[in-house]
Length: 614
Image (cartoon, rainbow, N blue to C red; front, side, top):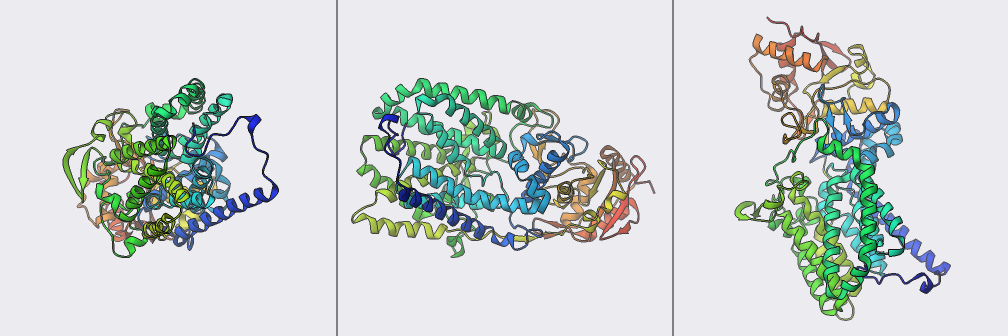
């Protein structure tokens, strides 16, 4: 099966190896593209690199804290062993099912040396930068092999794919979704399976790639598999391709069978944990209707783009991290014009490829709109395809808007083909169209926000006076996505190795009720005591406590087996500082006067005894 570039000839008809000069030019082009992609990646993340330890992604502080925790957990796994897919270090005593979360296991192990040496903050920014650059470079290589021999066209389209608005949006904290390089690598191996003589080897390699991709970005891998399958089927059903597809089908299917066996063997335990393990859940912790793409968003500009900077901003996305389409009117018009131009110049085989691209892109655009059509910020009563799909396994755990990311790859292929094919009088006009379409979506550096520095109480190990190795302590407020400092302090301690404390609560996805049938939720199921502290931190709310409240807190503390609470001088949330004074008043009213230790206030707790009635 060939996408655009003809399939390689048999070994007897292979051309002579290229001369040294041609090879040098090819590698020079590759290095130039890699450097350009890396520079652009550094530019996008530059404001975070200015102070990696106190600058956090401005629009998603909580997710950065979660991924820093996962990276630090990789150090724990390397040093002490353990289960990569379940931990009891958070959400004491229930634990957290990491297989059901975005645990980026491969990254956490691979970057463990850097995390130990420089901290999870540095590892986070390194992976984020390399993800963006690596995605652009991987698409460039894929397009240069399967779509066009024009290196300039492949480079342009590769940079578009790596730094498209949707992936810049997900750069606000998502190390899984910015791993856009997974799609071209998996698709490359999928297309190689047309080679019927090497179906076994290609099937083995694809199985390994799927296992690796699952451990980094399971949802993105699911989308890639759906998109690749849709394209292959649409391409194979074209009359001009049926004979080739029919001839390749037996070995292609055999290769896929090998892939299924290899991937199934490697992923047997993580899949069990994901679907049936402790603390798993059904669906997702987010409202799928809320996270559906507005049809107008395809024609709008993302927040971190020149178009938005010039005044064409909007609020069509659920939040700045989920602006998954946002190609802008010029790009949408350019794609349509490119398809018309390519169709008119194409032979039947090329038209089959274009048709498969349009089927894939159109299907994923429709799915991204969610169960009901949203138009200009308003949900209509018009039902859509996802209203049926959302009840199916896997689809019930996905956010519909993210299906729009598949169109980045579809548009990239179309741009590469059109740039290669534009000639004669159409070339200047097409070049002008490229400029008009690409300039407004050129990315701006990510926003950053200051976050609280690590307290000396944690950094210097003073906490060890209050709890034994593996014991439970907690910062105030208890860790959650909107107040993730406590999870960060545990992560930084874990990254240094040695003794470690556990924490109640945390930022993760878990069950809203006991059992695998329960729907997902963000964080632990709230109890009266952690909610009391969170209300104080977020809203400055001061509860009027009585002995009934103290009895409830006493039971909660005993359940968590927590031995101490501490309140740093600086505490931060998604929008900046939290209400520290309200927390201090609440904790003092509940537990009595604290002791000052280093740069924190500490309340000792005797499980089952504190707080005492008054």
